[in-house]
Image (cartoon, rainbow, N blue to C red; front, side, top):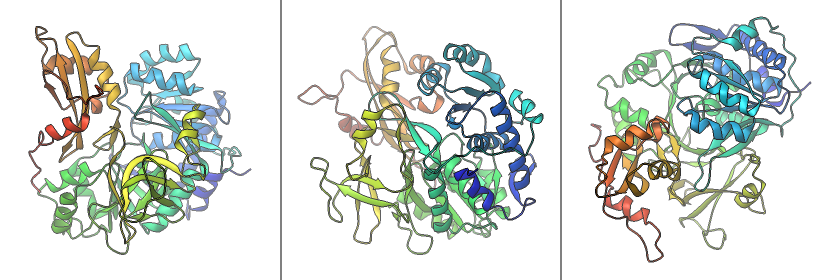
Amino acid sequence: MSNHLFDAIRHSIACDDAIFIETADGQRWTYGAMVEWSGRIAGAIDALGVRSGDRVAAQVEKSAHALMLYLACVRCGAIYLPLNTAYTLAELDYFIADAEPRLIVADPKGVDGLKAMASKYGALVETLDEHGGGSLVELAKDQSGDFVDASRSADDLAAILYTSGTTGRSKGAMLTHENLLSNALTLRDSWRFTANDRLIHALPIFHTHGLFVATNVILVSGASMLLLPKFDPAEVLGLMEHATTMMGVPTFYVRLLQHAGLTPDVVARMRLFISGSAPLLADTHRAFQQRTGHAILERYGMTETNMNTSNPYDGDRIAGTVGLPLQGVSVRVTDLKTGDILGGDETGMIEVKGPNVFKGYWRMPEKTQAEFRDDGFFVTGDLGKIDPQGYVHIVGREKDLVISGGYNIYPKEVESEIDQIAGVVECAVIGVSHSDLGEAVTAVVVKQPDSGLDERDILGTLCHRLARYKLPKRIIFVDELARNTMGKVQKNVLREEYRDLYTVRANL
């Protein structure tokens, strides 16, 4: 039987003894071990009654076993649903209710509250910790490593990733086997990955960048990765003599520049630094090149499309641009009002089309239809232009999505939580330029004059309701919010007013 994505991964394995993963504590996983253990976990999932097309939700810490869980879902035909480890139970309730997973795999530390929620939706719960322990692994030990992969075609779903929208609740982007495979193969070729590469992997694995871009590119290259639980500048610098490439968000590069250990000698063995998930400041690009001799390669993608464009491996990597359309991907810019295709250097809506573009939003046919043009182009919601050399420039977002440290934050969600706090009259949440995070979540709040509310009171309440990365970095109290003649809050005015709020620049 054919399993579209995993068959391609198998084909890329040159030798079972080749190293796939090295962990921070010195463990080594060969490609042979990857096939065996992903097969064992697939057998365990199958034994639990999960069938092709069922969803498997995972809120687990980053580990080699967590990657085996992802691959196990691919092999047994389940649809993988990674969830941010910072999500609270209140946030998880929406995703579980919407996706209706047959199985939830969770860290043992937070499983008690999750079990009560899972029972409400008829889901099974198993555990997996960062050390490879837990009930799922115990069950997998009794399974054969010779799992027979489920038959899955190019158009079958491999994953659902929830993406922050600009209106309403989060939407589940349905990604097929071909979406993931085509993009991994394109990026492998565009970025010149081979079996000789060793990637420093310090990204989380619950979103596109760390899970699909980093992991899948390594798998289809037969390459290896140094799997780190999180980004630590000193640790990353210490590993560069053993690595060839690194993928990161702009915050990684800002923090490396702040470290005295970043020198040309330290990066001498590295061939490529890649940045994405948030805009890379031109100042950071220039400072890194001056300090190391390496021009960071910036690319552009999103949950719904994987990667769309990339600065070239050979050729000019132009600061402030996200490069050229990838092979097989079409990018165009259209007029915001008419939808007409614009000429070069004209700013409008970025639209993309290609095998990387998702199948649609989970259980949202009307929303899916609204986001696609009749000719198959997906409307990204990003504003940009294409210069005469063909490089794509992102100039902003149509709506008010905040990207902080590589994470997408939907302001309305934060606003709704703040508005529920006693003493708050109203608020507006905006993204303000921040040298480290790209944008910092910032709340502008109108409070009742006699409430006595302060910043600590609001943050103290929010920390129990929102993931840490969604919490405002600053809360500003004002007498009233800026509004237009129609009574709508003018967030553009607020962003301009507070644009210098975080002006302490990194020592680049």
